[in-house]
Length: 106
Image 1 (tube, rainbow, N blue to C red):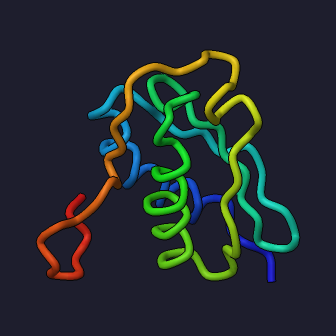
Image 2: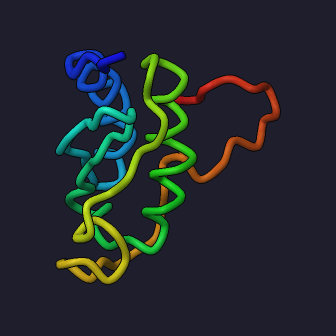
């Protein structure tokens, strides 16, 4: 089943304010036939030491919950630690939800 690009973009638009609050952003690069979504983390997220946490606990989890057919979310090489910007800092808008109420706090 082909994933609707517009569904992915709509969910990324929901996530974007959380990333922007920490100076970052996300850009959709591609969606393959296996349900793998490739994104580029930009701004403060690019090269951030916590970008893997942001990707797995935030972007991937939410896309899998809301867009049927998404199996995995992977970053471009220049998005992660050691990428083009080198990244500084270290916060993730998806770093943890300590209130144990199993809701999305974004």
